Length: 498
Image (cartoon, rainbow, N blue to C red):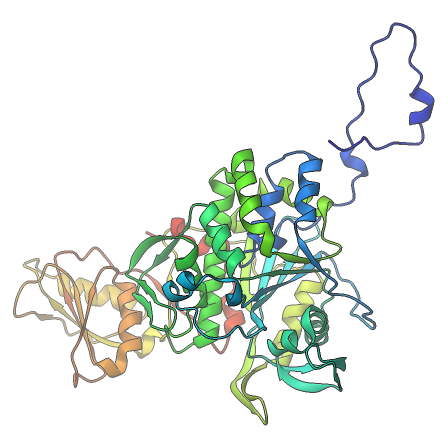
């Protein structure tokens, strides 16, 4: 246990009167502790690995030993002309490749072939409000167009003047320091802490937590990562969770779609850690410590006190305390000579977003959460034409389904028909050229069967089966305007779904 804090009056009270019971050492007064520091920093991506470590309420000496197990990096060395500090705490959270630390068996199982890129695979700014009651997570696309400040290349040791790069290349050229400098130059947000995890840390953290529950209304299949999830609720362990957060070939949104899934996974990870009691279980605390600390890197300033504060704060944290968004994009395929296709930020809207972080303002007003959360879809329902057929003996079913789809925003034909045969399961027939529209419609009809019919054309056909229970609300998320889709954590976890 730590030795008690000593106040100026303490030496005068030290001598004890004869035969009096010695005074017990006073515990460190909470009032003299500086304001609580970020309670959310280590949760993003898989950095929850470190948050969990600090939250079991075990003694200071134990946490000190955890501190010594964290690899350190000087992410702020000799940095000058930095942005002014705002209110609250800002953490730059990066996920690195790290596949060189993965076993050959894991490489094959989770499609982790190829050489490590020595770059950042994921990057987020995690803002912790000054009152420690809110966390805002802003995803920074790895292909963002960026301008690296003057620096010395970490590999070649050659000096470079300012030059354009993709954001994730900053790590390869100048490590954490150049990454921090580049992000600060782009956002004008001062970074207070730097936290870094890799594939190994991510998988170990999820495994020790016993897996994380995720929900999907549509099939998720990505041949590149090996992800293959049917519609429904799934508990993902470390390897499968890594496939989920790495998948970027599930829809046309590519990296932007992947960041949305990462945000949803993060919300589910928070819910699991805060609701399962793992944070208060000393034995689980020990297990997590042994499992994950070996692959976490943090700046020198993130130490024992921060770990203790994080643990105390985590006990009352919930997914509704967090909000997620992605930096606004103006151009999706901004070509740059020598770099290739990049994402160009919308300067005006991005400026307003980062101003909110500096001013410690929430991105969304608190809103009540009632009923099922609308499922995200990749095609605007207004562009999806649907005709409904009744595949049951229930009179008027097709008309009711048609009206429900129209109310959900789909372009229903209002010309219901009777199917030639009864079906037990609702079927969506679609032309493979309109597969994105079919997946979006399937999100509104959970459990329905997708049936490809080449040559059918743009009109989708729904045959309502005996299993039909209703139409699920959907929400179109325009990947070119991600900031319009700010979500709270409680709106994307499985408990928010019907």
